[in-house]
Image (spheres, rainbow, N blue to C red):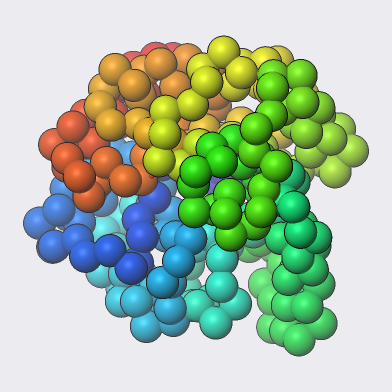
Length: 231
Ligand code: 1GP
């Protein structure tokens, strides 16, 4: 496993398509979070990604790109996270886009900086579920089976329980975690404050906070200490 991600407990995910003023960005970058992940499910372009990267680079915090659109892959990030949506309804999100990208750009791909993420999309209402036509209504046994597939057969460094926009089933998530031997379990979705962050942190390895940065920054900032205090 990449040494950088092995130590992450808390990550803020910033959407290049959503405005964030300098004061808010500074607070996020100096919050003590382990990394800034740049990514979004729609409206991510080369220009808005360059812009956000250059603003985050004023600070020391690690900054990684979660690749969702090939047109928006910008050089200069610390790592490139590559989602593989394991429960996608269309193979494009599992392997199709990835193979097309490699066919076109393999000569310039910095392989050592790429980290695959085995996404398991669990909120049927999330944009990512709709875009990928994900089979998102999984029960604990099914989610655990996907997690084992990612960990034991594919050997992925990250399994990502993605509830984007909704606090997830925090009994289903530990059922996934229990099956993992090598993969790190990322959890994202609906964390709005210290309490929800603490609850999520208790059942996963890395907590991802996205939307709350844009809706209630003060509470979002409190999630850092809440997560870090849990272990
Ligand atoms: C989204 O998992 C992240 O990809 C975080 O979700 O925006 O609901 O915090 P939220």
